[in-house]
Length: 263
Ligand code: ADP
Ligand code: MG
Image: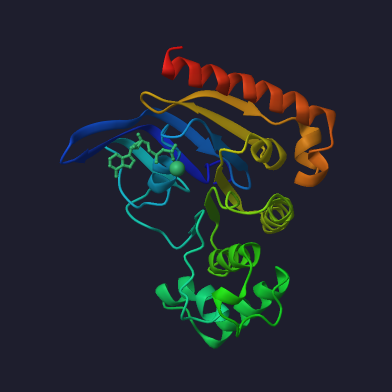
């Protein structure tokens, strides 16, 4: 079943219901992500990006439509899906190695072999010998790498990344973009990245999904040119295609903001 998308949202609409009433967050979402593909979701705040990731993660079901993983209906969080958030949520009282093993623990896989893989991944991401340290001893970039180890060590097939780099200094962010893209490519993983950083979307993705608000929907889909896809995110930023695509996205989103505020 090579052609079955790794992930799919089919005719998805979602209504949040709380004591203030009902709110249509996203409507008529149609999106298929191929195996090994890196897709970014961009769009104004409140357009439903996190909602779509939560649906893909199986945290709740859509009000209308279907969410599929490998062609099968998602009924809840699945072990083959890794979710990485903007905040690292490391437990301050746990060592780095034990923090990185939280996902394994939840899945009942915190074995000696599992801990061996934690050490390997820490080393792979430049944190060799840090396993015994505590979160407060680490920089923001290091903590975010621990969060990445925590996600990767459970060996997910697909990664859902919700603004994982947005709280980091620019230089660290650029380094992590390269590291994450290279790692996911090498392992053939599928990824969906939510970002408000258009430069990041252009530098990292195979495809960019532009969303609009009121209610949240897909307004445009951009296939990233081959030259950019073949380059590392850092190299991509130096190519002429990069500024062209950035400009195009910028204009697209500028229109979106105006449309909403009715200038
Ligand atoms: P984004 O990630 O693009 O900023 P979200 O998916 O977080 O957008 O939210 C989409 C819309 O749904 C927003 O208007 C938000 O206020 C609303 N929303 C999100 N979560 C809830 C919730 N639990 N209850 C009610 N409304 C929500
Ligand atoms: Mg969000």
